[in-house]
Length: 477
Image (cartoon, rainbow, N blue to C red; front, top):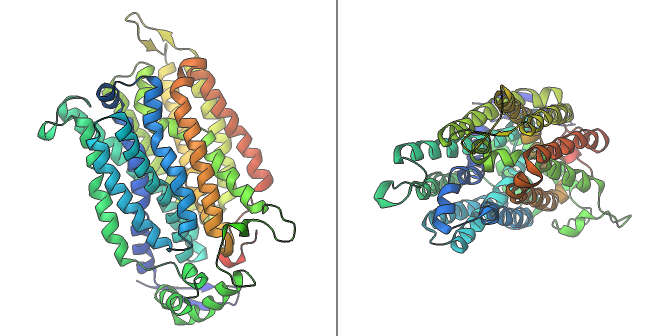
């Protein structure tokens, strides 16, 4: 399927091969699915890990957070490695890491072995998190780049939801996450092993998509870039685009390097990098991954049964996908910045509401904890509205922005640093949550997330610039 539209500053007519681009996006965003599944699978396995490895609260936090160490390293390494091996080459490496991690995590005989397996998976998660959106942005036409890049977040949430559904079904049919399942292994191990199936599909599918044309030009492979661009947009557009990409690179035509992040005239870090780091960090400081990593534990802590808590995770996942579909429909119409501002305001209010509801928790007659009156429903509704606001704004839009806001010369390096910052913030929030949930408690912790959501509103107003409809070659640092 092809279609035509007026493209570029020169007003030339480009024939966009939408079918080919759609196939590329589907394959590239399987990495997002793996990112989501690998991040979410831990949610239903914590009782199994605790029983198998004799873990306390700190031990659970370390085992859950191990993936984040690998993710930070993977994000930084992938951004730089993609300037050498290519965007597709790094995604292939990520697929192999996902496959290895799934097998080893399920087979872990002890906490140290499990942590190693999850760090390996984290390397893949970090790589996929930064490379998939930048790859999509580098092959997509500007007028639909936002919605195509937003598909990444849909796939992340689909992966998370897929992990929640798989965990729920396995636990249900086994009789619990610690009960024996197929071949005499406990159910929680199969929750990890199932991940090997989509990881293998991802690896095979990557062989059928091309390398990013902007990477090819940066490597001096103009003829290869021309062939890819011709398949994407037609020969005439390829003739125009290759020199334009070449002109957007450094004046001395050197290959991208980390030192390009400094402004040569002032010697200071480019302002665009600080904006990227801020977007990446605030996306995590609002506490979204507490919901995804600890959702089952969180809801059980306020009186839900294990089955009800797992079903609540599924509900959150479905609502997240719906919110992302809204973003896909609007991001190229109303822009990135308005969505971020709406999301910040909505998250601040809903998080504060969740915090208030948790502040009313009381000890039940049997010794458990519950929320009195309708406060449990209020907490559940507010938490899911928070998830909707996040996934209708910061969830997909942050990745869209990071994939397109940096100039061609520093895109890989900018993604490396911003992605690293994002995963470090993720690790700090996720690893600290089990301890913070006890002292100072859930209410104070969620008020903290609400505070960061409010601050993010003013950050976006001051430092984030709109990128809707602009060609990547128009981006300046």
